[in-house]
Length: 281
Image 1 (cartoon, one colour):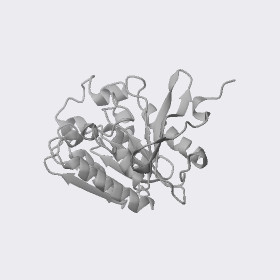
Image 2: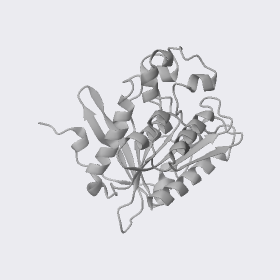
Image 3: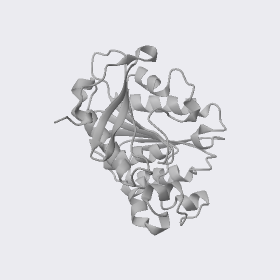
Image 4: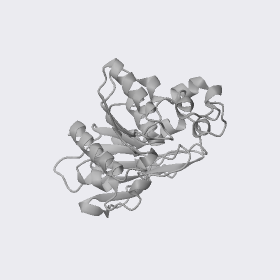
């Protein structure tokens, strides 16, 4: 009987920028009727001790996107954002997860949790520290990173770029119709937000805030028209009320995906690297 794809031997690493080693297309989960879910693992240059690892979750409104991109601002970046983070000493596991055309919520959360379990199970083979795992995401991936940090097992810290954090309130914040059947949130949930408020709340990081939450760094464009900055403010306020550590930083003039502010993407990546180094060292 053939072993599941996620139990297969690891592929050989290839050379990336700045001494980073990359394992491409590694299956981390497989289940009947579903394609094997894969990640790309970026390993720091040789170190004396296993490095910590951050799970990256891509954006795309839960509808599109892939593990290969940290957003359009980095499309031509050399080294890539993942190589930059790995070169700083933190391994990056950039994962694919089921999109809303494949499965509805909570499949996306299940996939993120499966990736963390896989990293811990195979940490010795991978050469990473399975006890030091962080979550980082942009847009829809920021929502997943926040959910992972608030509901997952032993996530050390979370970085979320312009995340939707309160799906129940998002239509109002964005001036949209909560009964729209074709919104990104409705496609994620399988029904309009107004028709499934309990499910929308379950997919909202603000619903899962607790006093033991890990440190959060929220980065948001002040002029984001797709996911208004109010969404990050809601999560910051909820975390602050419980005494959980949280920092929200905004960038004036930046729209969603850091559009409209040429320096915002670089600023966000620098802040991310600094935060991960501080909380994973």
